[in-house]
Length: 139
Image 1: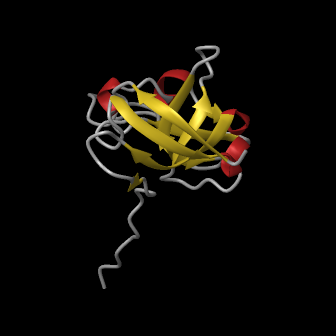
Image 2 (image 1 turned 120 degrees about the vertical axis):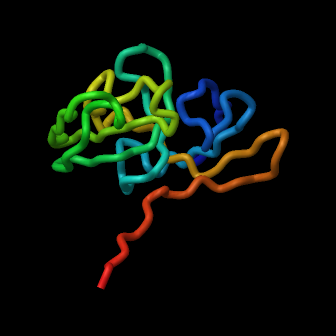
Image 3 (image 1 turned 60 degrees about the vertical axis):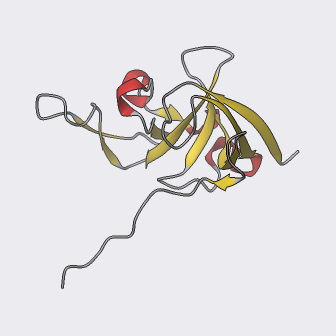
């Protein structure tokens, strides 16, 4: 099969995805990281909690440099380079997300798909888009 529907749970992707009740349409085409881009929301097998799946935003791919701590915390923060075959994922609700800041770079092999959209009882279908905005040249 190419698509699956999964029910969302947890607060780590608020406000993009509700803590409960949102059904997520997941494209399996993107398994193992094929074709994913920075800014996409992905589903993956959790690297620490065996048998659990998680949904987070992909913010870095191999070779990229990322901030390894929560923005706004005291101190300068630690930058690291993502190793080959890995990516960096963070929940949109950074305060309440267990993500790469906790478990490190995520192996691309654990990616199970890309979230294309959501359906909830309170709303109709809503696509979930890549959150990156193009850079603006200040000329």
